[in-house]
Length: 189
Image 1 (tube, one colour):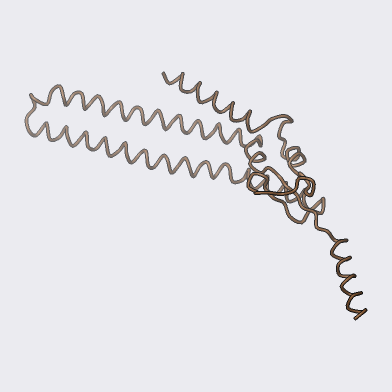
Image 2 (cartoon, rainbow, N blue to C red):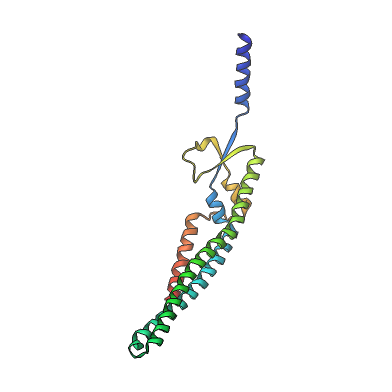
């Protein structure tokens, strides 16, 4: 019996001595604030602007032809009227097809540009965790609860590793993006 108690005590001491270190990181902050993310957003915005210009010209073409149809259809022969109606339907179909295609292309491009940034951030976190002997890292943005005093916050070191400027926050990024959207909206008017 004494041997069993001694073995149990040794096992408990071994478990206590090898307490696992846990870490946390705000992963969204890391990949959204990475300098490469700014360049990716600029590229995506440029593509969205080009798509909007193309869409606008297609809608303008449709509206011009629709107005022409309304004004002159009473004087056209049936053949001309039929040809103009088919032309309007064709333009509508092209607009719908363009909307679907460009939406898919923009989503693919965003994934293509952001995935390497996310992978780089993930590698930085893994490297930091390994260097500090941390066995598990939790994303503070998705964890329901963890004791702040029991985990190591890797976010500051990961920010530095990724070249994120000190003091830059997700709130600032959101304000920058809103300001850009407002500027684009004013330029469009």
